[in-house]
Amino acid sequence: MNNSSLYSLNKSDFINGIITSIFSAVVTALYELVSVGGFSVFTANWGAIAMICINVAGITAVGYIARKFTTDSNGKLMGLIG
Image (cartoon, rainbow, N blue to C red):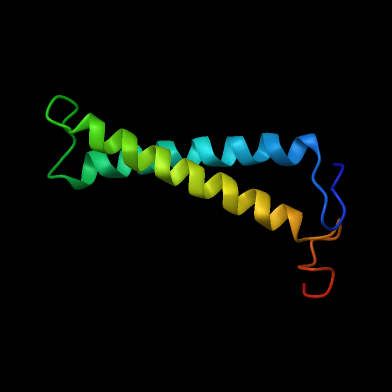
């Protein structure tokens, strides 16, 4: 696996960020469906669930990219910690 160096990103970082954000959005949608009094696809507020999933996906992608940007190829934060 080709890890990016400190303060740089490569294509795999963006691809993994997108995959991570999609996975977290799916998990969030499932949680929202189940947590509102049972699993009911027909009575769910899909607009609210979609907005929550979009927010979660965006935050997750930005967090993942920020983490990859500030770690070196060995996984050390700022090249020092880890």
